[in-house]
Image (cartoon, rainbow, N blue to C red; front, side):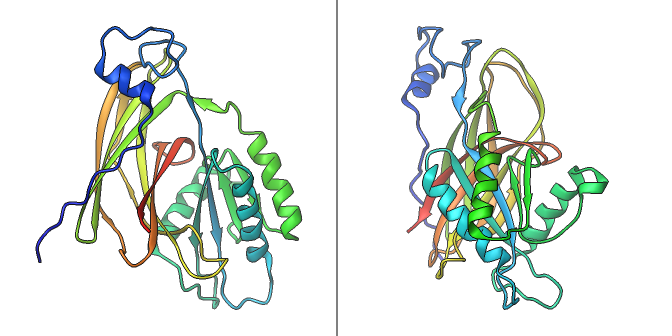
Amino acid sequence: MAAKLHSKYSLIFLGCLLWMSCGNIARDNVLDPLNPDSTHPRKHLIEAFVNISDHPSQYNQWMLEALVDLQSQNEEDLIVAVYHRTIDEFDDQDVSPVCDIRYADLLEALDEDDAIAGVPDVFINGTSQRIQGASSAETALGRLQVAVHDEIPQNHQFYMNVQIGQIDTNLNATVTLARLGNQSTNDLRIQAMILSDLNGVYRKQVVRDLKLSDLISHLDAGELKHIEITGLTINPNESQHLVIAVINDEGSYVYQAETIQITQ
């Protein structure tokens, strides 16, 4: 079967292109990595763990409805990824092995007294904010709004440019990561996820695949690194997105996230 190279997509901010190509850019540009005060608007990553089997309760459905409302109110600031899990005898048709792996990492990062599993379970920017359960869609939305509001600052000192290439059903991503501001950082990884929008109101932004980059042991202030992530599996028959997040080594904190449409 002949390999077909997909056209490359970029999340491009014109200011960043300037500092990548020009040597005489003004040092007061907020996207210039050599400006010690540089920052970038932050997108919050919400990771929700749910089960939408034939369980008689509606807790998961209420949380999913609340997440849809929350994202509609904050289109530019939020990315939602929904992990489906099977609970006891209640099978979820959208379950994937990567869901339990990511969930285990987040629970491990919590204090032992807080590491209680269950669905729905929602994490915002890693373990920065966590919401379990839902007594109604309205109550869940209110709790989510408070948690997102508490996630400050709205800007962060990371910028990403993402290019993707496709061969058959395999997707590869090249992430150019810049450390803005005036401080270096250590022990980062890039988390890449494939999300699908499926039929039904409760089957949106479903996590299909997840891969982590090798450890980025150090990134100086103003430094650029190019990180390769290969072998992501996509389905051309589904409407899919690629989500890229900068996380710490333990996976407990999400610094920045971006998303790209892959298939319609």
